[in-house]
Image 1 (cartoon, rainbow, N blue to C red):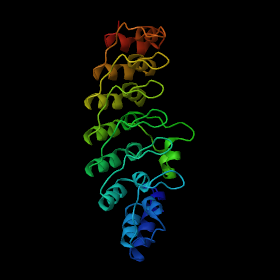
Image 2 (spheres, helix red, strand yellow):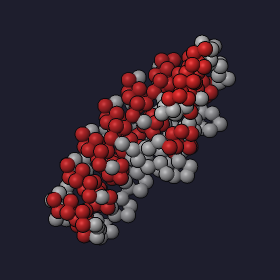
Image 3 (cartoon, rainbow, N blue to C red):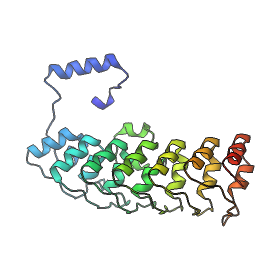
Length: 276
């Protein structure tokens, strides 16, 4: 209930806060199993442990371990869970998701909590070829079901944007690194951050990310992605160390051809950024 009371509704929140205060604080019902405990969050994890419960690496009927559920429950749950279990498993479910991937999808604060508890990001891939690094770079979660739906994130997560530079910065600060790995479509982190927006592109460069001439399966490169997007992204790409070249891809595309088909502001930005 606490998560459903909008922070902007000050009167409603004050009434709720007063009601909780009168009963002596929030009452935590002892969870029936490890999965419910992780879903409740830090309070549920503590209550379950106090009652003698043990957390395992076994998945539930949704193919999720308690660690993955805790990861979707926020930074406090992550820290409480690690305090009890003292390790993070690299187990993958049938869709290829790991705890580390769930952590990244959950957002910057959860990523930082994972880093503080010694969590490590691996190069493991999910069924779409996405790694933790690629998930940190992307703003997309528009499959059906979406990753957040498949991972049983709380419903309010569906309305939260995936992208942003803060997630990338948190990933880097917590030990994550970007490589030239590509997902099943051939997209690199460099391409995904461009779709994520100028702030993400700049954060990616600050995190040591590189822009290469790697191509997607449809013959697109990072520089073409930048020109496809908008003038601000063209500028951000150049400021982040990206270069516009005369490279022609396997599909016959180039950033110059793409820019020529764009709006005047894109053509101007492309020329000012050193486009051929």
